[in-house]
Image (cartoon, rainbow, N blue to C red; front, top):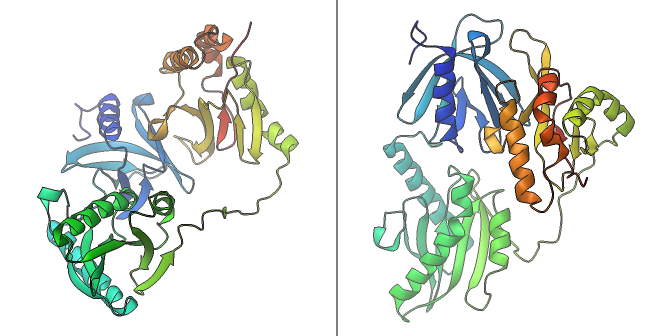
Length: 386
């Protein structure tokens, strides 16, 4: 698809939107580097005034780009985009597949990781012998090439070994324990009593063991010896993770929020939202964040973004779930009101829908386009008991 007379802003919006809806875990590349990860970022698309505008934001970044061309090739959406104030287009790529390396490059990376893991095993576990170590496909047992699998033996005892390298996604790392247990069971069946496979040694990249530690802590301790390690590949250093050390909570100091000043700053958006949701209860979390409780259900959020036609910051309200949050506008005002109605019916079936829904269409006409709020301001409603 190119930006010619037959391509409209609506068709570009549809093409980009359809691709993004099927790409919940995609990464967005700009200038060759990863700019956004959709598992941790949000987006919205609009086609107003004959322009297709793509808005992307995360906790670290916030950009708006005008899309002038779009082309899908090999699960990659290649966009020609314009930055604000610049006529020359630049490239933006949305990749469904995070790992864009060639098969030969992935195979080389797996081989290099196996060599590192072998060296670490031989250095850190003196007296043990690495009997086997492979990442070959084993379809019979449902093992793919993602994980390196091996057996560490000492006399008549042994440990099943499974490792995952740092280039894999967090989802693959979190799933490693499941495959490691299957691998340990396969090792026990293959040894058939000749060697006692006492347990499992699982190796994950440095800084990624939190979820695996929680899961391993709840395994049957009598079924096997469960051991978890973090491997820093660059220095080939190893750290054993104590699965019983789960009581400490990560903490940090933050500035005390001036709630009065924050409410004054958010006053206009709060007033607009309360016109729409009379029972809305606002709670200030920080100078740039506020949250309101509709029985802990968050239905809308306001944020600060770059204006579509200038370098000045503009503010907008978004609604929806995950990366599919959309900017509230006149075209989707009815959809927003319908979302509130359906949510109320599901969460509070014995109560009449919140009063907000009855007045939603009329109020939205006044609210849309006039919302003002600092970045990350959350709005929720409380059910009406009239």
